[in-house]
Length: 332
Image (cartoon, rainbow, N blue to C red; front, side, top):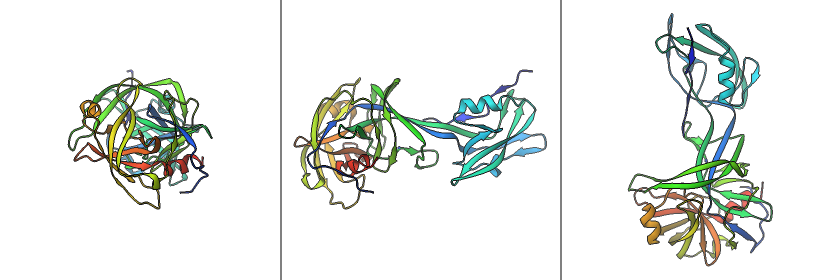
């Protein structure tokens, strides 16, 4: 009998001061980017019980959510494909396979059990796993002084663990917006985009609470270069955000800054604003997912980036000061 494998489910799918020069210019972002971050191994995101001849097998006695499987049967592991290839060589009804996991920064030797399920003609392990996180966001700026970038304005979250993703490797790619789901009260809208994995823009060196940062290979599609403003220069009143709503066309849209917080430490909610641009309102009905990182410009200076939407009123949002983001990218 041919025994097929269906044992794993892939989960679907973000202060130390650096040297900053006053009045230095940045290339304005606004590009929609594809984001991909990899775990150095395969992460366990959950478990479920499965039947075996003498009762039920509960893998939670061995594996915990957040464990990273680092090796299987003595072979280092980097991806789901490698995991499948190794365990596919074990064809008994019950297979106890030696492996190593990383838990709390320590290596632990455990046994991965796979059990053949005749009702589905497949092997099961009782584990849910994934090897990467993918998504869409927006570049805030490119810094020609040190070939770095800042994007997203907030962290890459591991939604399975409900914590900031502890990533080993990451990349950003060019991306085209194909459609938009409009925002509604209490329901987040979303940019839908295709990611071109053949067009690498840069790497991801840091995943922080106020954005992702790394080195870039291309400067993006926007040629606009502006000075940045420190937080003391920012005032309430008119401003613009730069973002993409269709394809890769970056456009400026009007907003009104309603509050500027006096901060002594970095935070994602330094700026409060309301969307006023009729075109943006018609197309998105507010701030949508994928818009995070869109640069905010006031008086021809970059002042920050969009970070969050107010779900009860998606016309309102928050932004982080560009000053905090530059401290991160200048300390790469």
